[in-house]
Each structure stands twice: as C-alpha cells, then as structure tokens.
Image (cartoon, rainbow, N blue to C red; front, side):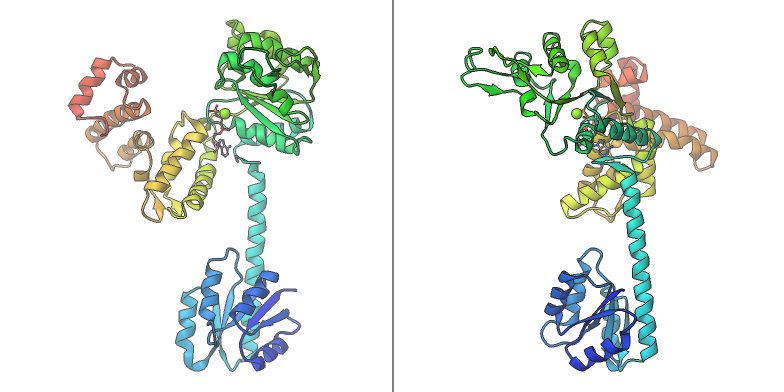
Length: 456
Ligand SMILES: Nc1ncnc2c1ncn2[C@@H]1O[C@H](COP(=O)(O)OP(=O)(O)OP(=O)(O)O)[C@@H](O)[C@H]1O
Ligand SMILES: [Mg+2]
C-alpha cells in the first residue's frame, strides 16, 4: 500500500487525517519539519501532506529541501481558507496541489488518490527508463546501434570463456572500456585488471615491465620487481596497442600465452601464472604481419575472438545517446551548464565524421558545456569543424527549399569546405590542401580571396 506522511503541528489534524485516509494508504505523521525529514529518510513516502504554518521551521523549508532531492514525493499543502495566497506561493515552489482547512472530506480523498496514482505512473516510467538504459549499455560502454548491440553480445559471450580476445578499432572507439567491461562480466571480475600500454613504454623496458626481473638482472635492476603478468595473476592482463610490441618481445609473449608460464629477467625458474589476456590495437595487424612487423604465430594465437568496435561515423544512431550522456556527465561535474542540446546542434553532431570517434565527441560536449551560457547547448558552442560540416550538408536543402540562391550557396559551399578542411587539419595548410586535393598554392589563393585567416 502507498505511504503518506502527514506533517502538521496540531495533533487534532494529524488524527483526523489518519482516520480520513485509513484504508487508502498507510499514514505516518510528523509534528514538524525536522521530524518529517527524519521519517522520510527512514522510509521515503509516496506523498506528503504538509501544513505550511508551523512553529519553528515552516513548511516552505521542507518544500525547498524536497526541491533539491531527486525522486522526491509530491506534496499536498494543507492550508487555512484565509491563506490561499500562501498555498499558491507553495505551488510555485513545487507543491503539487493544496486543500483548505477545514477539509472537505471527499475532495481531500480524491486529491490524495490522484496524486498517488500519478506517483505510481511516474515510478513505472522510471523503471522502464532504467530498463532501456540497461539495454543500451554494457559497463561504461553505451550504444543503441545494431553494430554496438552486436559488440555487447560478443563481449558477453567472450566474458565467460578464457580465450584471448583482440579488440580492434580506431582511436577513441572505446577499446579500453570494452576490455574493462569484459573483465567485469567475467568470473575474474573480483581479481585484478592490469593494463599495459605497449606504445607508451620504451622498447628496452617493456620486457621487464611485462615479466619482471630479479635483482641484478641488468645494470639498473637494484631490486627484484614483479611484472604485469604476475600482478594480474588470477585476473586479466590488458595489452593495449599490442601492434607496437617489439618483435623480440612478441616471441616471449607468445610463449607465455601458450605455456601459461613466465620467467623474470635474470631468473632461472619459470613461474606459473593464470592470466586471461585481452589485447587491443588500432592498427591493421594483418598488414603488419605481411610486412614482417608482427609475428604471424602470435597474430593467429590472439585473434581467436576478435571484437571490432566500429568508428562512430558508421553508427551515427549512437551520437544522440552519447551526446546526451556526456552532457549529463559534464553538467554533474561542473555543477552548471546547459540542460539540453538544441535540435540544430544535435543534427550537426550527427552529421560530423568524428575522426577521433567517441573520445572526440566527449571532448566537444565538455568544451561546449564550459562555453555555453544559456540553458540550451547550441551550434555556436560546438567546434568550428562540426559547424562547417553541418553547413556544407545543409546547403543543398537551402537551395531546394528556396531559402538561398545559387550564387550565395556555391560561394558559401566553397568557404565552408575550405574552413572544414582547415579546422580538421588544425590550420596546417599543407594537410588541408591534401584533404581537398588541391595544391597548397591554390588553397592559399582561395584563402586570401575569401579572407580566411587562422583563429587568433
Ligand atoms: N561506447 C562508449 N560509450 C561511452 N563512452 C565511450 C564509448 N566509447 C568511448 N567512450 C569514451 O571515449 C573515451 C575513450 O575510450 P577508450 O579509451 O576506451 O578508447 P580507445 O579505443 O582505447 O582509444 P585509443 O586507441 O585512443 O586508446 C572513454 O574514456 C570514454 O569516455
Ligand atoms: Mg585505448
């Protein structure tokens, strides 16, 4: 049964409400704001009946407190007939409705019933929304597109096994998040997840980083050191950018995978390690194998279960979901910022090619949240390249719909194409010219003619 909390300093009112509402709901009472807060913390009610005028803290204080509480119950204000204006004020501050004292029994019952029904509906919506969110995410990975659903499915299936998994995808597509999600779903979730970025560790240190070393193994080895393999014992070792692993170390790594044993540098005893290996790369390993940069035997050993994270431009359906999520995150972080994204800005985000994928989208939203000063994040808050792409794509529509003439549109098109290429190349003119497949000289001429200059 629904729970109703009656907050009134007069015992007579509390008793009569208890009687009036008996059978409809469970009634609890509090004689003031402090007692009410205590009761609500112990068990949140579905509805609060609140007297505004009480000695000590007034009902308004409780109202404003509830205004800051997520999922707060609705408030029905109890007020004496002559103070209806106060009740109106209370509704402005978030009360759902009011009834005047002395109560008209039937009217009171109806209002209570309505508010409780409304509350139950809102609950249901919340549960549904949570379920949808559950469906569109796996760990910290979000995605509603078909390719991401498929990725989620593969991760779920792979989590149960101990097979080596290779996660492939362009920079910023969520490879590390995928690895963490896989680990978190695996039977090893309670054991360590150890990440090693092969691209970030100097060649001469990577071996000892992975396998550890004994004291005196080499000049600088003053102490025995445990490697990442041993640190991940019982858990998961995530080898990021495996394509950058030195060929000599690849052989040793393959042996460790196959024999489930490692040797510390300068050690003589092999050590058994139970480690699940996940690897990631943004490179085309097949091509690296063909070019002799990556060992074929290691390649076949690690690509038993491949997980391919598609670039964001191939799953534009996810942009909206991700953008809203990053907006909420950035707002929570900053404690301020726009509440929603304008339709125009969303359209621009969906059209952009996102060479830096989801990471770039997150950065764009974070930057926009820092810049925007209204309640709505608009196109003007987005990086220039995104806006130019949007412009280029919209020009055809503008002409067809009669909003722009041919001359204006083609001039605008040229300008927007140049600006987009320049922005995407961070105003490096050689790169921008390559993008546009014109000579640097031709680019410069057009820039001068249009008065395009790098931003200060
Ligand atoms: N599907 C996603 N849902 C939510 N956030 C994502 C998703 N994909 C990427 N991100 C965001 O992008 C950031 C980069 O993701 P991650 O580090 O996993 O990418 P990566 O593929 O490992 O990139 P790199 O190759 O550059 O290391 C994450 O911190 C996260 O904020
Ligand atoms: Mg990464």
